[in-house]
Amino acid sequence: MAGNLEDGDNTDVTPNNLSPAYYTRKFHFDYSQPVNKQPLRRNQSNKHLNKPDLVFDGGDLFKYEAGIEILRSPMADGEKYYGRSCGTSLSTPLVTSYAAEILNTYPSLRTQTVKALLINSASYFKKNNLPEFRISTESVLKSLVGFGKPQKDKLLSTDNNSIIFLVEDEIEIGQILTIPIILPSYLKETGNKLKFDISLCYSFLPVKDNHLNYLPLYISFNLVQNTDIKIVAEKDHAVYGIKTGFSWSEDHHGIENRIFSNAQFKSYTLQSNDLNAVGDSIALGVRCLAKEEIPATHLSHLKSRKHYFSVAMRVTELPENKASNQLYSEMIACNDILNIAETAGDATIELES
Image 1 (tube, helix red, strand yellow):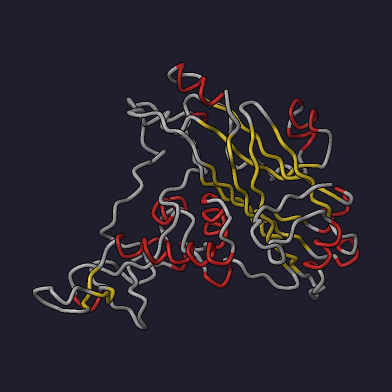
Image 2 (cartoon, rainbow, N blue to C red):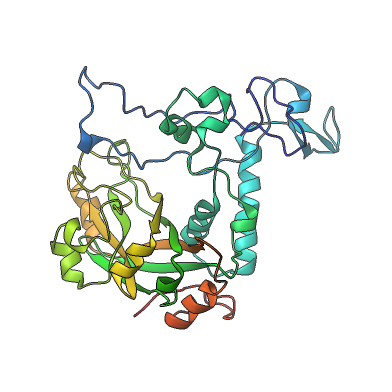
């Protein structure tokens, strides 16, 4: 971003301090462009692919006042002790400082869990709030800012009407897991909505010198009915899904032709009638696949081990009339969880039936 953490708009080449910095490298995928004079097929594109993962203020070019004030060496030829500069090398440590705050509070969290929390807290302006993007599609802006800018006040904090669940688990190639989520019974009486903001991150061994297969490991999630795992694994979404709009965070059709992402985010909202339909529980589904058209040794490595993944799930009650102020306490009461706020040295929360 072109902002420099100061009041007012000090930008120069970038239109304003709310916009993505003009000088930074952009995500180079444009699915609207033909390849070999042919349009991309559906199973070649990935509408969920996001790069960069996150953005943060890094100042703007040329005008001195547009830069961020930084510490400098007392041995510098000019601007001893402090001066101004700009660049992604300045925004990166600012995001890293948020990660450090998370680890300072919960030092045993996995790296990908920290990343999932950062993504889960991130947001950005809609294109209509940025004059230069009003005639563009939302996907154009998304390709510049990824998941957006992490919000410090949302990293670890909740209130009486929200709760953050963390899942640190592992999964094998070809496996599907479901993690039950018990829903408080009072929700059916309030008429309130329930929103799930879910982010997933995982590590992988990359395939070198292969842009399409660089990430050969596929892990995705979905909110599904709390039903037999065989139904989720073998039946169509129409059978195990909660409703049509609740899709997987990554499409697995055309797996060999599609570029994956190891950082995903998706929001699901349960309306009051949905809450009545699903009964007293739903489930977080996670599935894992791998590309087959990669070197045999690499594929063998993927299939011979389990793969760690991390999920951050923020559940928020959206009041139709007034908030109940009991979601946090009720979700803790009806789910078998480990509260990391009360347990030192253990940062894994798993939802179980």
